[in-house]
Amino acid sequence: MKRILVLFAHPRLRRSRIQRALADSVRGVEGVTFHDLYEAYPDFHIDVAHEQKLLTEHDIIVCQHPFYWYSTPAILKQWEDLVLEHGWAYGKDGTALRDKCWMHVMSTGGSAEAYCCSGQNRYTIRQLLAPLEQTAMLCGMTFLPPLVVHSSFRVGDLELHNHARQYRTLLESLRDGRLDPAELAAAECLNLEL
Image (cartoon, rainbow, N blue to C red; front, side):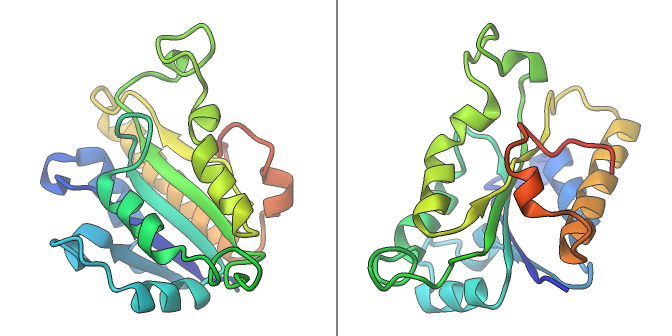
């Protein structure tokens, strides 16, 4: 059984119906450690040694967050800058994350159609995640396609329930080895019927 670390980041969680539902669907799942970065570090003083220990104890790293300005909330960038140290995560002796998987579970205000070359945002989600994908590659990790909930302001209760169920099923399938990360890696996203 693979161990999964969910790095959760939402600076205004009380106002997020989507992210709360997604988070609630995976809290308490066997083999999944849920780690709320804003709750742990409200002052942004990240405990690097603790975060590196968490990373070494898990096989799959999931960053769950809203897609803010085509990127992550600020604390996730802070986390990357501090935790993924040269000589630990990358570089000549930086092998601590080698062969682990990294993926994102995100919500966007825009529709799926807005994220393509002819859409309002001009790029696909996967293209916009290129800096994060390259970070994972530099660390010797496999970058998995994201699971994305689009049009977050218009998602109905039933659709939200289905997204949350899909998220939980995805993590359980990855945990139990029922999905092969190598086979998933080229997909645009993991919004699949599982």
